[in-house]
Image 1 (cartoon, rainbow, N blue to C red):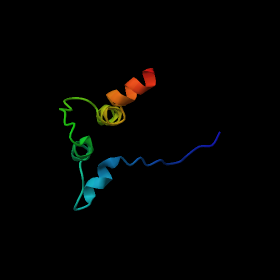
Image 2: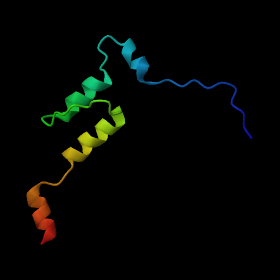
Image 3: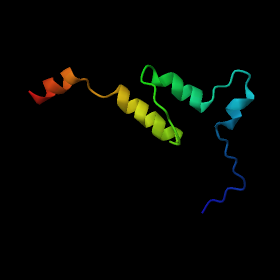
Image 4: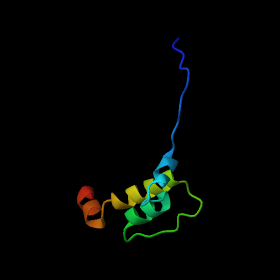
Length: 68
């Protein structure tokens, strides 16, 4: 078994050291586009999944074509 002497984990907090840092909330609000919704207490990963699924949902015409 290999033993690691030291491990350093860095989260996204290091991003806040830059002058023009972007918060996760700001980033998620930006990629929501016109489909703004209140994120509430949802974790950022779930907010991202909702944004992704809403942007990649087929529109009605695509659904009709798939049913034929």
